[in-house]
Structures are given as C-alpha cells and as structure tokens.
Amino acid sequence: MAAIEARLAELGIELPAVVPPVAAYTPAVVDSGHVYTSGQLPMVSGALPATGKVGDGHGLIPADDAKKYARICALNALAAVKSVIGSLDRVTRVVKVVGFVASDPSFTGQPGVINGASEVLGEIFGDAGVHARSAVGVAVLPLDAPVEVELIVAYE
Amino acid sequence: MAAIEARLAELGIELPAVVPPVAAYTPAVVDSGHVYTSGQLPMVSGALPATGKVGDGHGLIPADDAKKYARICALNALAAVKSVIGSLDRVTRVVKVVGFVASDPSFTGQPGVINGASEVLGEIFGDAGVHARSAVGVAVLPLDAPVEVELIVAYE
Amino acid sequence: MAAIEARLAELGIELPAVVPPVAAYTPAVVDSGHVYTSGQLPMVSGALPATGKVGDGHGLIPADDAKKYARICALNALAAVKSVIGSLDRVTRVVKVVGFVASDPSFTGQPGVINGASEVLGEIFGDAGVHARSAVGVAVLPLDAPVEVELIVAYE
Image 1 (cartoon, rainbow over the protein chains, first blue to last red):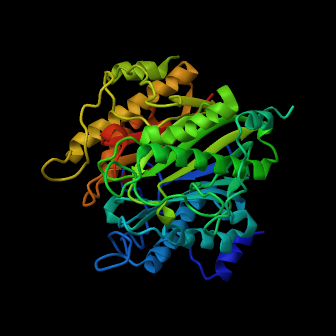
Image 2: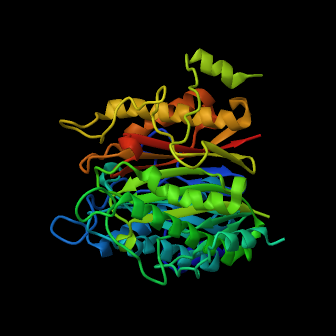
C-alpha cells in the first residue's frame, strides 16, 4: 500500500535527510491530524546551492533556477513531514503552501518560482497535492537563501 | 436563512467570480471544518487595477487606494470560500487574516491598508467577522500587485 | 496545578497587558482547540522600544537587540493567548511561530533574531513549547517595528 513511496521511486525522487533547524525550533509539529512544517530552505547536504535575491540582471538568481530551489524546499518539507508521521502514504491532503521568495524589488514572478514546489507536490500526491497557496516577495531570507517554503498537510 | 447573502445585498456588495490561480494551485481548500484560501490579489475582471509599491511620494500607490485594493482582495477571498462550501451562510468565524503590502521601505501604515480587508469582513459577518491578523510590508508581490490577502475561515 | 504560572514566576517573567490591536481586528481568536494570535509587535507599555530595520551598520538595529524585541513579541502573544483561554496552563502545545524581521537587505540573521521568541517559549513550556517556525526578512513592518511574531497554540 506504499503508494506514495512507489510514486517517489517512479519519479526518481529520493527524499533528502531532514534538514536540522538553524535555530531553536523543530522541523515539523503534529497537531490534530495535521503536520505543520517549519519554513524550509533549499538545503542540499547541509548547504545552500545558491544565495542571493531572485530577479533579472547581474548578480541576481534567475527565476528558472529559483524554481528548482523551490522544488528542493518542498522535498525538504516532505522529509520533515515524513519524520513525524513515519510515511508519506498517510498524507490525505496538502492543505496550504506558503512560499517566500527573496526578491529584487523589480521581480514580480514569485508565482512561477513557487510553482517549483507546487508542481512536485502535484506529481507526488496527485489530486491530494492540490493546495491553497500564498507566494510573496520578501526583502531577504535566512542565510541569504533565495526561497523558503512551509507546508500544512492533513494526514490519517 | 440566507442571512449573509442578504447582508451582501444590503451592503451593495456583489461577490466577484473566483479569480483563477496564476499558477499550479487552487483558490481554496476545505479541511476539517475550515477553508484555507490562497493569497488573493486585488484582481478586478482579470486585471490588477494598479501595480507598484505602496507609500507616500511620486510613483507610489497612496495608502487610501491600497486600502480599497485590500477590500477587493478580501472579496476575492470570499468568492474563493463560497466556491468550495457553496454559501457564505455556512461561515461561522473568520479565524485569521494575513495581509501582505508591497511597501516602499519608508511606508509603515500596513495596518491601515489591511483594514480595507478587515472592515469589509466585519460589515459582512458582524462578530463572526472579527479575526486575528498579521499585516506586514513585503518587498514585492506577484504581478507587482500592491496587496495580497489570505484567509482562514471556520464553517459548518 | 498552575504549573505555567509558577514557571513564569520562577523565570521572573510578568506577562504584559494585552496590546490593543492597532486596527480593526482582535488580538487572538479561539478556534477548535487552538488559539491564533494576531501578529504581535514588541510593544512595551504602549510604545515600541525601537523602530527601524535590523542589520549591521549605522542607523540599523543590531541583531542582539532585535532578539530581545522578538522575546517581547512572544510574551505579548502569550498575553493575547491568556486573554482568550484564561490561563496558560491550558496550553498543550505551541504549534507554529511565524517571525517577520524588518531587515536591511544585507541582513541574513533572521533565525537568530526569532530565537528570542523561540527560546522564551521553550523556557516557559518545556517540550510543549517546541514549535514549527518560519522566519523571514521583510521590507518594513507596521509602525516601523523591527520584529513581528504570530503564534498558533493548541489548548485543552
């Protein structure tokens, strides 16, 4: 019955290890049939693949790259979810995604960036992965990360 | 018993059509007696009435205008709520509002702007419209929108 | 059985009076065994102890000071929680913290700042105070506050 685990394998996705919090909190909390994740940075093996603000122009991170980082954030969030409920097969719905994009003030493509998270959730969970979402452009993120994503998921 | 629909009529408020998501998500999700909306931009008939940052000075959107846009965001959010539960008469409480204001760094009047959302929720739902709220000033919003508002409401 | 009240006394923490909202909303809402607080500014006796952006350099608020303000935000949030459920002894878990830091674009130490909130929640509630958390750097906050913190807590 490990449908989601099988789906991850089909998609060639290997969930990362849970990213340790960079401060005094925990990666995910279970509460009344829900998991709230902490905001996840696009950490890969303990380091950010890029730092800076997203936008067009010299010294900025292109939106296409940022979209890939948002996907990594989502996978890190799922690793956090799995760490507290044991298996992603228990997830019944991805309820809410909030995506923060460290943005050059002229960059307005936050929805496309956060699609990197939304699309991988759809690939993995199908209809149960379709969520409500807010995407905003913030001044700067922890460790100068380009993207941060948090999730609320329902589970049984 | 369509008290809220009658109240909307009294207030001369016609709910807009649901604004289609600008990306890979859905306008609202039903979860355990709650509706989580996506962040809503002040779309009117498919277009933003204004773009840019809110503040005082040349080229900025005045706070009074932004307050009107926050009201539109709230009505778009209610349209999203209605689309998933059928009628706003089922709403028992507006639990939480988060309002993001694309802000010139010198503009600190975010609460007044987001009152455009809070006040119309109070007009429509009375005591059940009184909510917890966060208002913050962000660097930039999707499509260069001046305001974005998301809701959590409880319903029966 | 007033364990938390006793713990506050041990810690020498006196909860402040509830900070009145600066706009058309309420400090906290009770919903299905949870309390959602509004975003809390570091108000002390009705005034902000400092205003401006957090960062390193002339005219900016040092991170160490901002961390103290985040602690004040958390205590203001707990005062709001207590105002709607009567006693902090009813809190079973701090579920989620969101911390917004008004940040100079070069400042990336938001996690350390919001630790001011996370640590005091841990001191007060022990294991029940360990939460999921997002920390982001925003352009500007209401009234030019350096920090804003909101909570979701579960209670019985």
